Image (tube, rainbow, N blue to C red; front, side, top):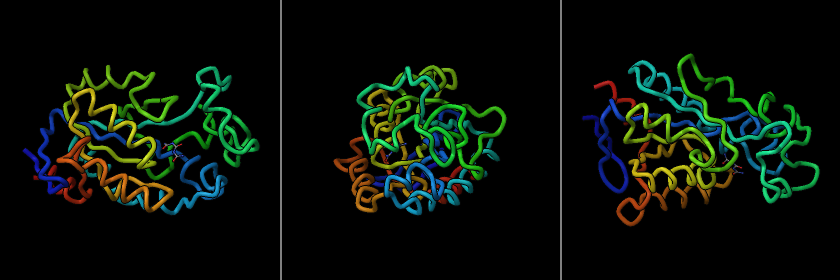
Length: 221
Ligand code: TIU
């Protein structure tokens, strides 16, 4: 069984029951000039995840293991966006407003889709989610049940928002989650650091934390 060095201790997983989850690697969050940057955020803190994630995806796909991508966003009529979410942020930059890459976080727009480097390939599941967590109001539980998944390797952005929410949801549903530090990113370095610590603290209260090269090596064995 593949085992990787992790915090708070070694993480073992069965390849037949493990899925790689890639959370919200969308242009709106990652591209210079996009929504994320327009809010004053430093997108380089997120963009450093692209290269290690591309390498992990390559190894994971070569091993024939399942990949699940998620995208945060809403229907064009915003009927799935709670008013409390919509009303947040500077008035000129709300969800659904025109941005540099189309209407912000709206399904079908260029900015809503995944960055070129990490585009899904045929057969990979893409979950469109209206919330921060990937389980809320989505088909993710059904997809994982059908795959027979017990463990999740979790990557994507942002560490303290959609990654954390998803890991907490997954942990409550009984999944063992390994979060990869080099493949998750926050706009805020201190949130990255403390966000990862929070997952592995107290003996792994929500999950485990490791680096992607150790997972790539483990699945090749
Ligand atoms: N995907 C995700 O984390 N959505 C966010 O809105 N994150 C922020 O950090 N804003």
